[in-house]
Length: 436
Image (cartoon, rainbow, N blue to C red; front, top):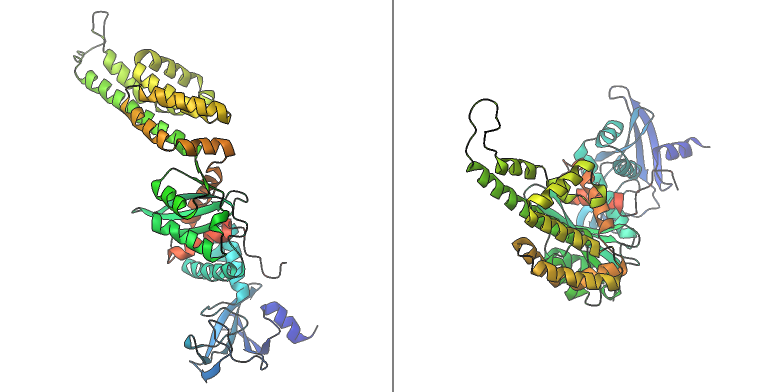
């Protein structure tokens, strides 16, 4: 193998790159490769890569960081002339070894992007010897190129929509997941109708009639999602996520528990205080105080599924049934709604109607209010049972995004966070340089 060919492979540059000289700087302990584009390449705009006329020599020679050779840093050095683009004006000319505006070679970018999706933040920084904000910029560039080469919405028919908080101060991201593949297909900052409309605008722009191909949409029952789906995909079957529906009942149950506990605490304050010393047979009891103490530790006994209860928690539920019939009735209402999702469609339809009637007559305000929401979303609940769809895949993606969010702390913009999430969970993870 010729020496030039060997250096071209080691530096990760294309045949259209001419290597003029290689030198080692002992002071900085770096290898500097002097390169230039081949003369057969006409000047191109660095943004659009269209041929255009040369403008001037720019600000002189500049350097691009390349992958290390062993433990030694490597830099490419070349002239950076400017060209006159009809569309983008005067801009730096395109070079074959790096993206426009980047201070690193394409191979360097690809390795950093791959490492960011599979390893820890500290490992990326230590191995590549760059700052974390630089990683964010690299990820945005790599995802920009990846997004331009693929069709994110190819074959999209069944989707799940949800939102996730990524920063304090009610900062949210809206995300869309493909039910059939589990891929994250779209993300954007915001949690409102305007944000979700952007997704459907991009979906329709990617191919005529693609909104009409959406057959099923799962969500948590939020009106801003339902209204936009009805507007842009009226033919789609809307499914209410069973987990969120049961969570509504759990929240109503917890509201009842707090009310009962507060009533017991108020009653305990009115009981006469005990005198000093050990209580005797003649010392009056304090039943309200004991009841308040018992209710304080009942949260997890009420929240957990019956099949997962410990022996102590089962005893706690039995104690609640005898001492607080109202709270126990609320618990049974929660469990009754959960059972609905385990039944076949025909049985579930009958059971749900019975549950609505039961909740309407229960005289527990929290569940009377809940049944109104259940009636509003009744068709979506039955659709979820019929088609066996839930937001389970979306919640799994949410969990991974929360980890990415913690890792991405320090990125300059939300775009870098979204790019990292899309590269990691979108099914288009970058390849290591030299791998096929």
